[in-house]
Length: 89
Image 1 (cartoon, rainbow, N blue to C red):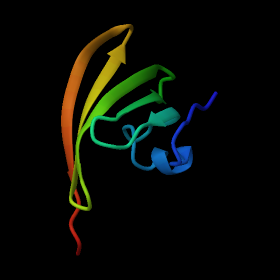
Image 2: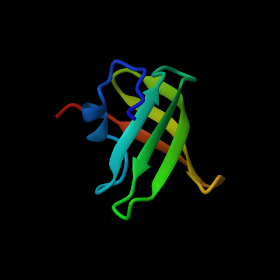
Image 3: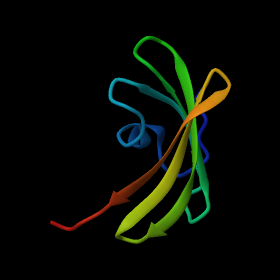
Image 4: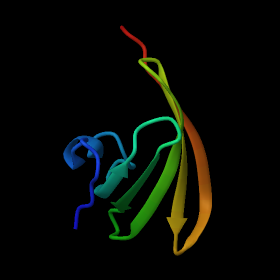
């Protein structure tokens, strides 16, 4: 079952989210400062992972700062913070 509550289509989100080789199965996002996201991906070996996070900062059209938490077997051993910076070429 594909879960999606944003205007972003799952096909478009799949190009941006998840490691290469993984399949994006569900994506739910509230895109704004303090908004969250939750997604489910499937590894090439068939194992599902849930990832959730918060958008800490969105500065249009410059950058997005976000957290990511990977859930593995009910535990959250991996927590990351990322920044995507956009530049005109």
